[in-house]
Length: 218
Image: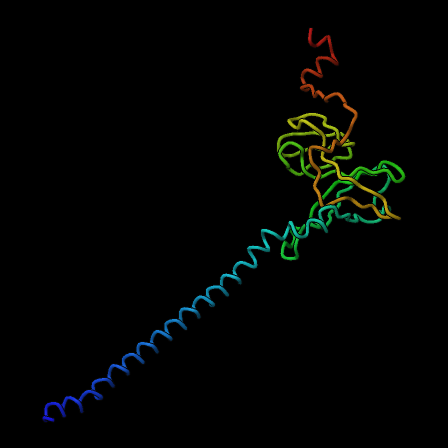
């Protein structure tokens, strides 16, 4: 055997060593890349799940607690707090709220004590565009400061742009407490008063004075 053959035979094992090392290095690099890829997927999935929890809670929260609070009855207080023949403003906590809602979870209504255990509970919002109405005991009218809507003491429309009476809550008297069905707000399906009354026509002062003094107009 010649020296060239001997030299080639001796060099062959030395030439295969770098190929094996390269293959091992490539395998290790591929394994690291696969591990980092899987790790990034896991981290992205975890972040996505964390971000999805409040979003799902916001979207599905009202539907999940609707059965428990939508038709909830809320106490407005003992009936002794509402003198007979008077109308008073009462605040209550809307049951369809969360603790984070703060003061915005409070709602107001007008309570009219007719007699005995007979009441009327009106939503504070005007039936026109939702402005809060005020009660004036001197004139026995609910008046809207936004567009001049007026309502009688029983909630029926008196004058102005509203086309119907005030929205009225369903109520019940349990023991000595007045409760309203506060989970569902009053809607157009709830009539405030079945009796229709004539509109109040307010004449100008000059015309009223002329009617009172015919000699002056002549």
